[in-house]
Length: 447
Image (cartoon, rainbow, N blue to C red):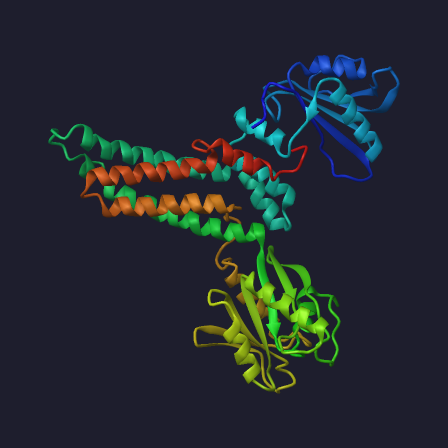
């Protein structure tokens, strides 16, 4: 991790042209820095119209100067924001001038990293900054904002406090074995521990749903040529994104479309028809289709409702990865003279629908939400990252083991200690420096 006593600077607005661009600077003695840059002594938290000058005195740009003295700032240090005209040349000139005055270029996420290191944010809140910026749906943005406001952190801290209380009671038995008082029974430790395990399990479920809200569900449309995969993509997207013809093999490359169902991002991937072909272009398309299937969260295997399952369809099923979730979609039910519907066969859901008319699409929407783990979840989800889910799952597992080991008090105490340590990694109390570097390196520069 970079030194914390130097001054960092970065362009905080996206590349390109805009009405306003912002250069952010964080460090010590920023009032002196601002005086050299503008010739004005900045007033805390007051917008000052000024000229940003080069070393020779010429004006690089005119704009607004904002000064936030530490520790009452985003990073906890003195912070300057230079709001100028949002052209690339202007922004680069201002940034270069800041470097001339002693700043260095900030690393990705370094402003948020300093906020974390200066106890302005915990690690969950810092990650929520990046999640809010990268949110692809309104629901994801709302969830990120709740985490940034500290909702998730407060839940984790509450669970940690309950674990500490339980550890205190359990370890009292180890420290004072001669006492006749049954600490475990009087403190109702077993019931408290079971309640904790239940609450941890519920939080894991909400976190898994939130993880899908953050990353989205990767859905691959697969099947023989001319079963309606491209028509289904168009129907899901609400637009003609893929070329649809009666000619088998029209789709030869992978087509991707991001859609939303109740705020959940769904990455829909249309692929070439899976069949043997001597056409070199179509063969490449089929190879790419199988690569996408390997990476899928869910495969929608399309059949023609008029034909039912054929030998070609069965060959596709045989080639699917064992772990992949599959839903069979019998398309063109209108041409087969059948109504839309849902059945289950052999442990797999089978839907009848018509991509052309839209009949049965609400059934597909519902199944996609179920596959995303969204069923029954609402605004209480946690926009979790994989490391959050791993830590919560470990805390759940260790707490559940502690319940089973209440009769072996030393082992129970150790399981509770490990559960607390896992939870504390979420907010950053027990997070190693190398993990911090990995987390913040994925942020935007300027954040």
